Image (cartoon, rainbow, N blue to C red; front, side, top):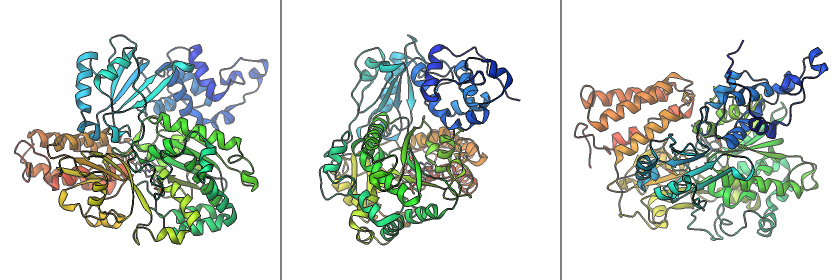
Length: 623
Ligand SMILES: Cc1cc2nc3c(=O)[nH]c(=O)nc-3n(C[C@H](O)[C@H](O)[C@H](O)COP(=O)(O)O)c2cc1C
Ligand code: SF4
Ligand code: FES
């Protein structure tokens, strides 16, 4: 038995939106025309359920066209895919970019996260509040605005994602930065839209770089141009080496993952290549939702063919025939560029059957997230693709044993994957000579906040934070109040720690982390209490709610930090500090996944450093 949703049949437009993903129904059992055969035979159930992975694409399609997902639309999708309506509702209500209540068709998602706050993001929200009304309300029924977590445009902050629902050309999405309140308001009132943000890459054109050398040089829409600059010579080399040879080079390179967990890539690839269960799947994790992070976006927007080539090599080495590129919903330009690149590669025999005449078959499908940071966690990502709520799974089993659809799966971050090109062209041993023993190669860093030249930078591992900041023209005020290293799940450090070598081991030694490569500088006058509260809100919002330590812990943490910042402590400030430590410990020890395990890290470091004033009630403030 299942809870029915009710709410009337789907409209013609809603049906068209769903059918554009699923195709028209083929029987009365799937909401199609009822035929005589339908009255005698029940069929379609297994087939329909095997397409459950199309649930999120179908919901995204309805959202795109209608601006929200009505009960009728949900019923229709549920019937088509044979998914219990309550489960479909559970999925639709999981994602921030999907609305399950009526919403105006035009929406501005205005970033009020940490980097944008440093550039006036909060002021934009206040201005919109006074002119357009509270977030989520719509005076004219045509447009509204919402607060958003980091949109991955931090180098050009403040940022905004504009969406307009409708069919065909009417549907439009633009991620723009920098924007002002007047730009957002004008667009919402039917005026011109701000143009899409272009990546800020101060090193662009530097031919000595490995990961960024084509950025700004190659035409991201042209396969010919990519090939002119040496594209697809790494795949040719891979085909010469054979799968085992490719894995050997990656092991020799000592490449570790750049998605945050720093796991050796060669070991992961080797395990999947040797797994006897078939098929194998490859997933490129392009969910990039860690506040302050935008490196993968820049690569996908400006050098998309490099990612497609890298994924093809990864699939060849590990025996995968199907790949998924899971791009966060807030990156419309990256998604379009990648879809274009995949189409071109397919047309030229670089994807599909018998790639380059080698007999090897592989294809890539782009999957679009819908606003959920947790879907970047690899097992949550599997559930998201499978059409379930994006909730992490317990490990073991590990993805290399039982991942997507229960099959051996390789999951790699965008930046990790594109390293493979140079590893194959120059050899794993030569690659390992760059950087340090424990952190080989080069690394992309996302510099934002109070730096002179924010943007994405590539440096060899071992470069100090001071050197990296010098490359970016230094800090605007010549000093900082604090620097957030690694993202919201990272930690704050101070100017005394500028000589830390940027390596996995170097940052660990000072109790910090490289995380996703975030370096966010807070100027001397930054309000650190506000920053810490925003991070706490982020984790409370983004917790999937599956396990108690994280679901309740992130909530209690936020409340506690509010009390500390406002000075309205329960008991003495020391009592609050002791409670905070207990909470942090419980989240670290008992949460299922990395979100809960790291949710207290930034606040803990801020408290340790005495970074925020708490109206005189907390000791240790140096402000
Ligand atoms: C809450 C959470 C969010 C994550 N988000 C991302 C992400 O957006 N992109 C990513 O590559 N890895 C992310 N990860 C790490 C992945 O789980 C996984 O380790 C990674 O994709 C593996 O790729 P790599 O080995 O190439 O780093 C996240 C982990 C957690 C716990
Ligand atoms: S730690 Fe948080 S995000 Fe992770 S599974 Fe538990 S509730 Fe969900
Ligand atoms: S885009 Fe606003 S904080 Fe990243």
